[in-house]
Length: 199
Image (cartoon, rainbow, N blue to C red):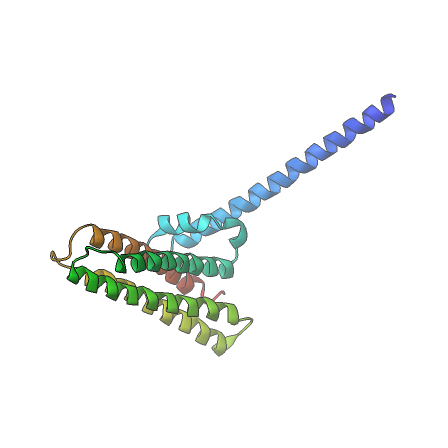
């Protein structure tokens, strides 16, 4: 009778040890991924926002520059899409001053252009495959150009609300959203500039 209990005890100890070892390995891997994200984000203009927005995806990013760039662009695309939805709802809102309505319409066009540029960039990175040499540089250059254009569109919207004539909640809410999109997009561009040659 003692032998089955001893075997059971031994199996339990082995199971607990292997579970602890797996957890320890996962923790080390997660820690390395987090450190990679923090180190990479130090090259951006908004490092705290960069770390905050990418840390959620640490397990999929791991320590891959390719995954880091794709994730940063996906975050930017997601924020731009939610901003477009917000601006669209504002275009339907009653009681907005004519000048605000015109600025909102312009912002809707700008965020639509931003989305086009970001979608093109994501597709370009995915379709790059194993390009090398001049083909590779051409793809990276396209992405850098399109993201820069997206940043220009985002800034154009914010500039459209300049001046005291357009002041208040509408201006503040649109500006806050566009500034956030501009910052995550700027971070994505900085990461592409940093890792473009290593992609």
